[in-house]
Length: 180
Image 1 (tube, rainbow, N blue to C red):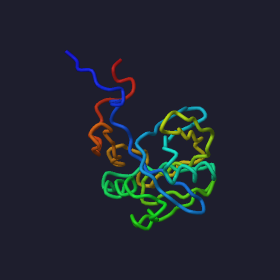
Image 2: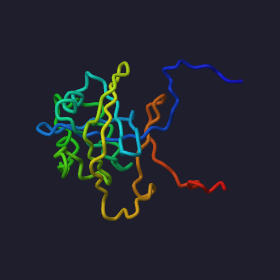
Image 3: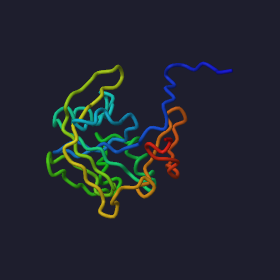
Image 4: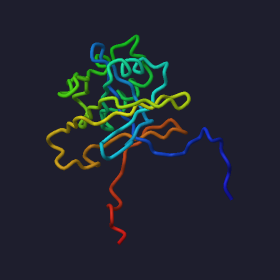
């Protein structure tokens, strides 16, 4: 027997928990779990943001943003960036993050994150309470000691929307095509 829930409980989980950086002249960070791959060719990612958020207009005005993948050891900083407004606090200073400028667009990226993805805004889609910012990937930066990148070494953070909890990922349980 199954129990029916409200559609507001999307139950698509876990979601990646990333730090979106933006604001060429006023660097800011926003914690986002509504993000993912939008297209593989050309490579495009998306982040959905509410119009009330400080980062919303920074991305719209500059036309660029960064997606930074934090490690599980950064979970406190990730949480801080999600509960404090960039209108009032410089989140780079709050979290002791160093700004790393993207080589293509100049967007601020977070040096402490092992993966940084530089994006040029391609389009926006208004969806309801969120606007989806779809960006074309123009550069990817990864720490030198992750070659090739292994998820267990990157130790990314996942978010469970219906419980509000952060998780790290476990071990690999298979690979593409292993079921043949």
